[in-house]
Amino acid sequence: MSRYRELDFSGVNRFPFEERETKVDVGMFGRPDLDDDSFSAFYRGLPDILVAKDLKAVTRTTVDVLNAGQKIIVMMGAHLIKTGLSPLLVELIKRKAVSCLVMNGAGVIHDFEVALFGRTSEDVASNLESGRFGYVEETGILINEAVSEGAAKGWGYGEAVARKLSTLPLQHPQHSVLLACLQQEVPVTVHVALGTETIHQHPETNGAAIGETSYRDFRILCNELTELEGGIVFLYGSAVILPEVFLKALTVVRNLGHPVREFTAVNFDMIRHYRPQENVVSRPTRGGGRGFTVIGHHELMIPLFWQGVFAELRRRG
Image 1 (cartoon, rainbow, N blue to C red):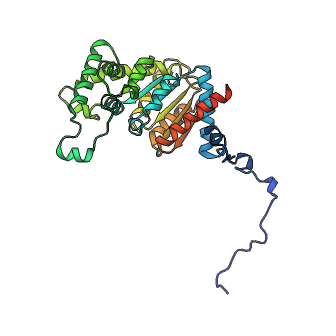
Image 2: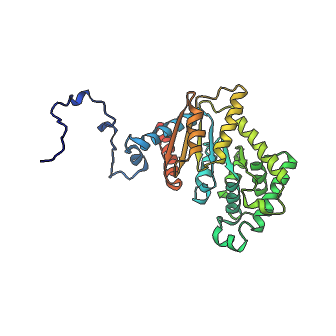
Image 3: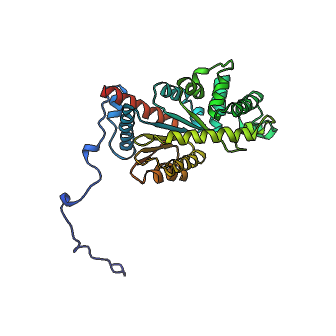
C-alpha cells in the first residue's frame, strides 16, 4: 500500500459520444483505388485531412482562378531550377497558368547557365577553398552586360537578361523560364540584393544598373499586384528576399487605393520560415483572403500539385 493518497475517479462526469464534437470522420478518409493507376484516381483518393485537404482546396481555387482569367503570380527561389522543375515552369508559362513570374538573382544565374550550358550549381566548398567560387567567365560577363544594356534601354532586370539569352547560341533554350516569359510576353521581375550573387564579384558589375533594373522590376511587380484581387499568389522556396519584396509591393498597391484584399496566398516550402508565413500567407490575407502552407520537397509537391490542377481542369471540361 502506497503511503501517498490517490485521487478517486469514481465521481467524474461523463457524457454520450453523440454530444462530443470531433475533428475527423470517415467521410474525410482516403478513397484509394489500387486497381486504377491513373493520376486522377490517386489525387481524388487522398484524404480530406490536414495538408491533403489544403492541397485539394488550393487546387480547386487555382482552377477557379484559371477559368476566370484572373491573376496567378508565381514567386520562386533558385532552388526550383536546381531541383529540375524548369520544364514544368516553362509548360505553365506556355499554358497561361502564370501571369507574372517573380525571381531572385540566383534564379537568374541558374536559369542562364541551364539554357547556355545545360548544367549549373557549382561545388561551392571546393571552389571557395581555391578562390575560384563564382568566377565563371561567361556567366559573370554576359549577365552583367545584359543588365547594363537593359538599364540603358529602359528594360527591367528580368527582361534584360531574357533578351540577352535570345541572342546567344544556347544548348537548351527550351528549359529557360526567362526565355519562356519573353516569348509568351509574361512579365518576369527580378529582385536583387547587391553583394549576394556571384556575378557581383566581377569587374563588369554595374551597381547602378543593377539597382535601376531591379527597381524597375519592383514597379512592374507593383503594377501586376493591382489586379491580384480574386487571384492567387504562390511562393516557391524564397525565405527572405521575395517575401519582403511582396509585402512592400502590396503595401504600395493598397496605399494607392487598389482594393487588393480577396486573394489566395500559398507557400510551398521544405520547412517553415518566418517571413514566408507572415509576409505572404498570414498578414496580407487578414483582410478577407485565404492563406495556405504546404510543406514538402519541391521536386515532389509542386509537380504533384500542378498535375492535380490540370486533372481537375480536364474533369470540369
